[in-house]
Length: 160
Image 1 (tube, rainbow, N blue to C red):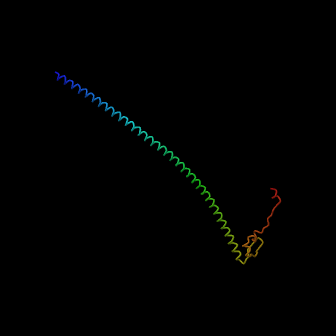
Image 2: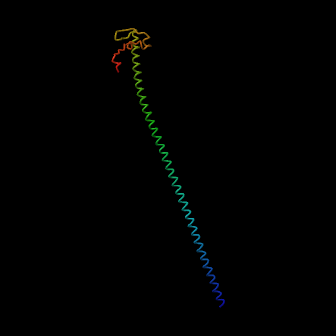
Image 3: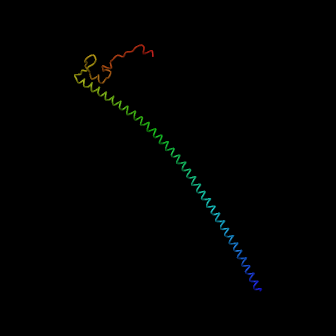
């Protein structure tokens, strides 16, 4: 019997060892589970931080792009205003050119008329009759008959 009781003792100690190893195994699994949970939490925290950093970068990029857009719009408005000013100045210059062209054409016609009348024997017609012209009358404009008219003034001019 002693042998049977010895067997029961050895099987009891084996049972204790088995239950101890099961507890150790459970403890080891719990520890691994805790480590995995901590690792997952840390990974989630890093992921949230990356996501927040990405969001902050996008917000700063939007701010910079809006600033650039405003600068471009300001530049476009300035350039448009400058273009309109140049276009208005160009229009004025075109009108002046047309006026000067017409004046030049009129003066050319006058010169042509004067030259054609002087080739008719040096005579040109005035309101008083025919007079002879000299070469001086063309080079000195004050010798032209239409410029040698008296200027009439009245006393009431000085009242204003």
